[in-house]
Image (cartoon, rainbow, N blue to C red):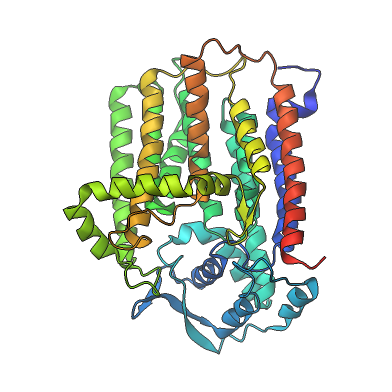
Length: 471
């Protein structure tokens, strides 16, 4: 580490991250018009239900939702023409006029929110708490909508700060990952993806922190064990597809748990607890019976499952065709395809972010110990398992029965896997590409990463202004 560049050294990157995230994230909270992040209508309704203590969505026919104040629908309808219509614009005056809509809790109606009905209340905790406070203070719907967004941003920033504090390497790469336009856009919204990303990245960072210490005799304490245990449950409750990430605990040597017996006992109890919690939550939801595309009678999870049983190879072929058709879109929407996937970043910007992530993975002096081959295998298996589960779930609930091509995959689904993926790339470079010389200092790459993130945030704000507001 170069002591002559204290403002950009590795230890201060968490502070830089928090400053950039809060400054530009708060700007995005108020610059992005209401409900203009993917599925934000339904996340808002679900968060409001949770804020009232309604932890499980209700059924009404094929619909999943809750009885909510009609004023929430009135607010949402003010901005319903913007998604998927880039020519449609709004104005700051139109947004401010929506302040006049009162809550009027006595006028209620059943509100359908299929895309968020199966989500655990955990991923809406910051939004729900803020909305409950807003309701207690007598605020109107638009006010506690923005309160919910800001609370999500604060929770995500706090988790990101500790993620960067914990990781023993790759801080510049993870800084770029968390401040990509897509990541920051989700963090500055009502979306459940923000808490999901925060918990998955924090869990990955903590496990790597506990497993990559240079002192082989180091034993982790009770607080670290409790944090690993608690965060693993959080990861399981975010989305079932991220469940394989808890296998990253295998990266921690048994000696750091006080011996093999304690190690095995911890893992067994953790896995069993996560299974019980996951099954218990899924038993309260509609699961694959949830109808996401009511306008498409050919999309049916049970019918698709029957098709898979009789044509097991068809799924693999559909995935291959889907990746061939949507691969560029998935990559682009990992870095940034804002709004309702209708405001893409230019390909050159996407390329710059991807190259920066790759460059930040180049090993440097002072990095953690080189991972063993089996450890890289565990990381690769966990990431691949998550991807396969996501593909299968989208095949069941989003792709027409017997469809030749997988539909529904988006790059944002894979941001929670980003830290594990970066560790895998870094570890492969260290282990299998030894011709790559380690960087002698970190401060140069840290400075470049900070500069890229700031420039990228400014560009994202300009892109949002151009997309949603008249010139």
